[in-house]
Image (cartoon, rainbow over all chains, first blue to last red; front, side):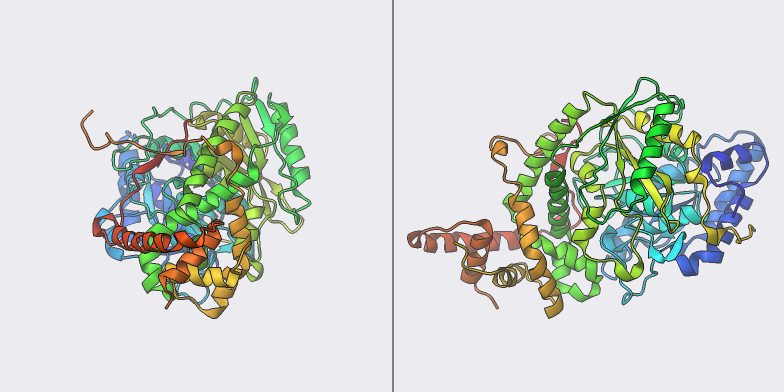
Length: 469
Length: 65
Length: 60
């Protein structure tokens, strides 16, 4: 793997002329060449365009005026987000390829490009950002670089494995019920679901209109902050985008948590078959956060079951409205898990959907009341470190084990960072949640934790023998 | 008193939605239906009687400010 | 093929509603009209890739 695991380190090296953007991108492609056929990271690579962009970045660096915040950094785009290059497929036989062609770059893609980011290709996803792999369909099966018998998690699968393997230094994922946070957790990297409306989602195939978020995935919270600086901000093309000023999220990374009160909800009873390594890892994280100046107290998140159900009902119903015509006419072209998951929305009525929105409002108020007593909430991201590809199990069980959908119901920002490993070497993950639009405090806590730990810098064993270009 | 079982309900719902599924997939829907229905039914809490939904409508959105 | 009467029985069961016999005919007419309305709104081609008019806000 490259010597530069993080965007931050790579930017320093580029500015100090220790490496060129072309070399950085070539290293990334070498890593991908070595492992992609096994890990299923990419659906499409844009080598020629990426190397041309890298060469342009090198010209800018040489001229001594490197203004772009991500200049020369190899970045991947989840293939439900539209790009100028190539097709947008949503990893499906069903999506009309003309939809993405008509859009070109989504707002987020254009922002990364304008910041000098090198778009290396389109990354694997679960079909339409939901469900699990289907071996009967002509698409790669995403595998976890930490153990290739295991799933990366989804749906931002290729982004998770791409960052963990060094095939990219950062990338875009999307999160409707956990699809940034779960692959970040399972692949041992960091990922941020920002506040709903913080990052414009136009140019992204929808899964849940009132739940979807586009966000950064990278090794570190600092890298996520760097990317969020570029991605965040209102755009009129997205009716859900918030007209909220954008802060400098990197400037907020002080490393100091003094004065912060953090509420811990272990969610110990949510899933029966909880990995025994999780609670010792949480204890160690609490100790670290306390040493950094925070006060950690026990809390109970309100309406856990109800808000988790509201996310599922809302996302299924919203997805079904989008997919109904195609499910009626092309049922077999969908992945089995996609059609069963989205099709299950037939169980819900219009009134159920409205009721779920009323529960969301009550939940928002109750959580806001909790946030009058704490500045952040932490939980384990998941009660499991992952599932083997042979035992992905039922959707219902997976939802129970993953502690992410709750925060889509209320819209608060949630960052995940690695916090250790279980007894078979799979990563464990800590979720850090803040008040709406307080990504600054969320990222500050994640970054501070990563200044005193090195889980985010761990390299999967399979990558240690991969040579750079 | 319920008069239809999950099988009948799911059959009807799939037909209403015009979805044609395999027997195995229908069996999965039938198996999952009671839990899904109970999750939705659990949201009809008494204290929500006068609560507005969290999604709101703005009639001005396409008009100049 | 399932009739509207059969579909209605299913959604009433799902909703936990048991209208008396004298209401059944009116409800069936309303349900049948409702299914036509649903077909109508799914037939609006410009809405195929459109966002809903209801917006969620993280601020409460």
